Image (cartoon, rainbow, N blue to C red):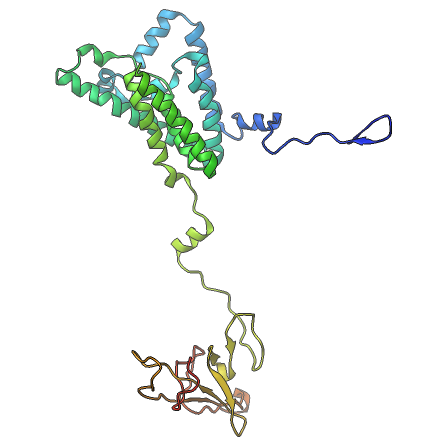
Length: 338
């Protein structure tokens, strides 16, 4: 309702712009049990482990993190266990930037693609980026270029999976938002490579981002045009035959007498006896404005067709039995060219 000042004049409240932040919009960006069940349940697990990391027993926390590490030694012994266990922790605890990105990015991605595909993108980026960074370490240790202690380097967290979801979400946004998200993500990856504080994470983040971008084609649903093209042409509805002299829709071919269809450039000339003649001739191949090589037959269509109840319909010439397009013909004198 409008406010009224003491003078009796109504004062309208200022309207918020389309980009203004509203409490309802912020709440919709957060995960919910009904809207984003995968993100919501996963976020509760990460919240519990993050609280335990910050406030739990330090010795126990360190032991759990070492057993969950996706280092080269653990990947060789029990790869599936450590790949799943390492994704249950947030590097940095409650104050990690990737924890905030997890809630916002995965919620937006799950609302657009569903929980199954969101989980698939997250796991794909987490697994591929981990293997792409840890397997070269194992090879370098085997070649003697790195010490054996590199096989037991602590490696855990959700950053690879989150970065993959960022790349996947960008492909579902509009052009401006898409390139803004990708630009910020690549700036984060470039900063990691410049600082190079953690070589594995520095190379793993851009690999995970590119992995998510590679999933664009799998996450986009088929539109109506693509679906109809893939399934083939759909036959149109059947229509009742049009009576003689009845006008069709605008732009549609007019149905001639006797079931024939009059094409553009073909005219009907009334003859004696109430008959009509379709006149026209195709241009010979290679002919440019010259005389036609040979005149084709002229098709005459009976005008006064008798119905089946009154006898047989008489037709003169070689009119087709099935209604269809009239052949490209023209008269012997060269007129009526189509």
